[in-house]
Length: 303
Image 1 (cartoon, rainbow, N blue to C red):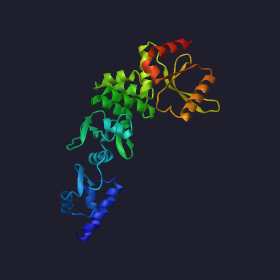
Image 2: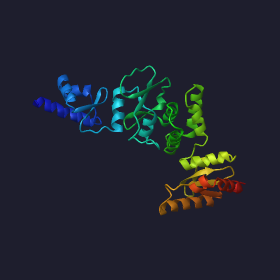
Image 3: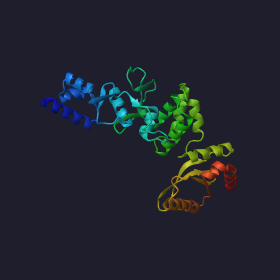
Image 4: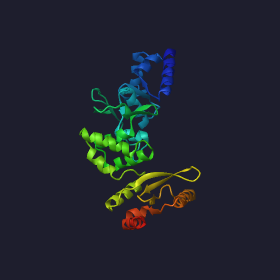
């Protein structure tokens, strides 16, 4: 290979390293490779297409992140990662980057032909489009609406809602406003979202299960994730607070297994009791296997 070709190959590799290991035709041109030289390298398998117009080097594995970045580069700024792919990009529960297909959303007027899954929409709001790790991605609120519209399963949407709330990527009031607005526009999936929102507001599957138990038992919905200020100005958050000051905590197996975790839980419970509030604590087994005990305990503790 001529020395000029070697230098151009080195220049292209440097450009790729600075662009998450991806190249496009403009980068090929800047590197100094001629169209014929480039075609020979693609034909030889040195560079592999990820999406039309974007390539990776043969030594670079094709990962979820690489496919997302390649699609974003090919589609440009009027596109955002959408649906399950967006949920995986945000790290929401139940969405594994290793298995999710990459998809994007673009304005309805946009035309696209290629191997990337693209959804079109008339609802193209700047507030729905955020950047995470350099990629334009649908906000958590928007991707939850899209999951319902794209026909995702209720269990996966529940996981997206609860983990998005836990990570402070959205909130119950924000979701309810957007769902109400989407319902007025006749958007698909709104009835399912309304149903799933009935028991949302907690931060885990167990807390959602508890809220459904309370609703089915005819009790008034408690406030969720309530913040108190301890003596000395330190913040403290409890799972639920019912009218009259009754605090309820639900404890799953995860996050409550070590001595340090149990110490924190005990001290928080003591701080709540010291503030004059009544406290009831239930385990996963209580909520799932003995719901009558949970409901009777709450009723007996109410003023």
